[in-house]
Length: 433
Image (cartoon, rainbow, N blue to C red; front, side, top):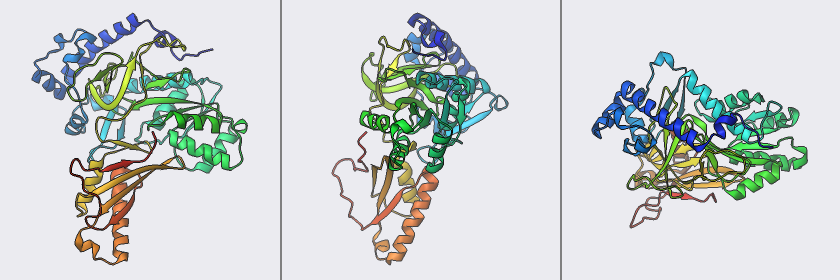
């Protein structure tokens, strides 16, 4: 039997959902006009006032918000509440060291945790379950979001955070964890490790997993489900909008229901910005209609996907989004962390290297790997091997400081990276996702 966390909302009629969206959008537009000068200026540049937005049909008139706006307005330029009313920030890495900093009132956190609770219940979670949250905690939204959602459902929550695999497995077994929340690559690694320990799926107490923050294929889903003996559910979110729980998979496992009482989704042509009809493949754009502290209108996610309405066997009525099918920019997601080639280039130039480099991403034993090959200058190339090794070590440290994750660095001979007559091939992604 299908369970719901907030059935009246999750199974509301399309008319009711539309009424919520119309009312909340109008209110949110007035909110940003009154409280965020940055937004008011953007609207005035388009000749708009709040009176021009009477509902969702007028949404297309509003200007887009992009990562560039977030960088320009950093840190407080898009905050719509006095800081004394804000109780938390979460953050994700920015493209050139400037981080995306999102603000939350207590009400924002409550609604975000409700969204995560919906995802946990959709995966079969109840107050009888033991939920192990193995996403990173801290500034990253994964851990705090699912932790709060687990509490709302009433699960016994194990906040293990990421890493320390032996302890993760010990707790899964000793505390009879039934739901696992982490990145899919880490779930696969945990599964492989337990298999090497001689554990069969029947001996693993888990029944479900909620996996997000990075791309994963249907083949990877099948492998995780077979190894751990679970059903593996997808979850989607962005720090800019709140975090995980913007959309989540139900028992049908064929697309993620968007929490439309909090977010309005559009698909646009990434080149022209034109809104595309339902069922079209394009760039996903979100408007947050209930967020108090950090409301984003028409935020361009850069994720490419498809939106579709259809009767779902689970009974939920909110629109579904497909798994993201790529990006309209050059961002990579590695171990759940946003990595831009421009970040790596910034570090190289600061360290005195030329901009001739190549980024190689792979997945080994279900874990993402990142290698950066960098051409040395002729002067560096004449250095002794020990000096080259020292330079590589320095570069590893500099990239770790910028990206927050480890990258292997290989310094190569000048002019050894293949030149392209067209756009330089900066990234080679060998992962099959």
